[in-house]
Length: 274
Ligand code: KIV
Image 1 (spheres, helix red, strand yellow):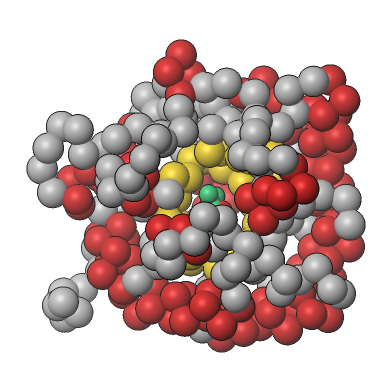
Image 2 (image 1 turned 180 degrees about the horizontal axis):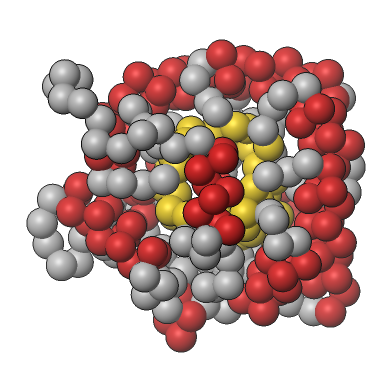
């Protein structure tokens, strides 16, 4: 891997992401777990890399994200940070690394940020607002995550769409408001009706909502890299598009994803929406 050529763009900062959001430019995000893919995704112009605990499935071969440890996340965040040059890097706090106390969450966040993350992500609403406040007050930018929260797969009874009924949608909106008020700058909205995601964004205009299976009304989109590069075996969720279908290199596929999110042609709610 060559590391001598100058990066083509300035590093993406939180300030720059907020500017993009204020100007109505869609934010692009993909997962990456190693230096090679981090470089590729960065070179292809993705705004933000999520070192997701989805690596439990894509890299480690587990059937859920539950077994992923903080040490695993620190290792992969380091790998990504070495390959990346300009994208905004988000490190996922894995299951068990933030639920115990605000202090535990801070210790785990520091480990991820010292490994190279610019922001941490944690799942769930309600009790997490206090943790988000504690972290943001101490200089840790936070991305929240509502809707389908894969670390709670056993509590949720499977990978199901969330917020489908009135009560569920109301709870999602309340949790989103509490997390935004607590200081979350960004929020992944996973697997929920597009109308609910739109309402969350409208309720919290300054919040950068990033959708995955949540329709077009969010400030940006994220996909698992292995899914959109057609590397995942088995049945993919309906919200995924195979960006390799037109051929070419992996980098070209990622460039197509960036272009499609920026021009609003992905996701197409009639195919990829709920
Ligand atoms: O871990 C992950 O990759 C994620 C995305 C699916 C948003 O949380």
